[in-house]
Image (tube, rainbow, N blue to C red):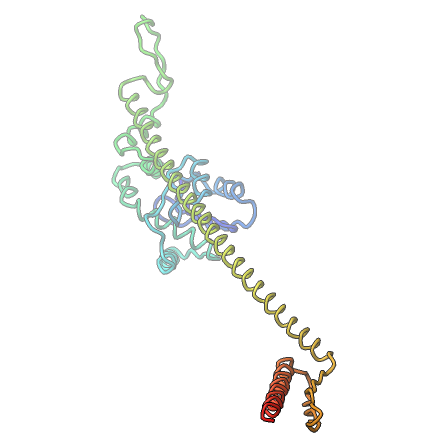
Length: 327
């Protein structure tokens, strides 16, 4: 199975693209159903991922899970590529290798794989001058991507290619060091094992840092969502209070309008009252003024008329008293 650099574009439709360790595009696909399990099965059929790349930072959960499942190194860009950069990278791949992609999901996955390969290309070019065959060169590149130093990686490959050594009977078994089949227990073997452990720890630390960054990003989103919800609730409360005030004002205005209509109707239904002055025997009768017709009687106008008649009566009584005193 070939070693791969895999780009992943997560989402409802998952985009996948794979390069070999020399940067040549091999496969691209998009998955619409199945999610993580379908993506995992698809990559297993392609080969053995050495490096899994995301096109955004922080790395999405799907990318982290795939990298953990394959125990592959993880690449996360320092900043996301712009759309123009993605299109340019895919166009260059097509011009060089005649490798097309069918949709935007495959394009983003391929651009992530290309970006990861470009970031690691100086490291991957080192085995070209090592004098190894093609298979060992790929193994060396794979080990370098896992964080193993080149000298230690070459020693590992050399030991893997050695034929198993026959165990010779020991004369003094109690004084002989333990022997591992095919790999004599020597200080160099122990150092190689330590080197491999250190590389695994480096890879694990890188993965945990990416996972921590992803979780912190989700926490910030949740905090912003909670803050936004609180602000929205506060705005809703303000709007509800304002609506309540407006409704109260509308109710008050309706009551005022209905009250005025009721008073107008009550006044219009009352009979017309005509006040006549008190007449003395010596004074001729003063005809009362004719009522002014109106569609709706005005109580204030009636009051004014009544006051005027009272005033006229008082004036007539005053004149009568003066006339009697003069006699």
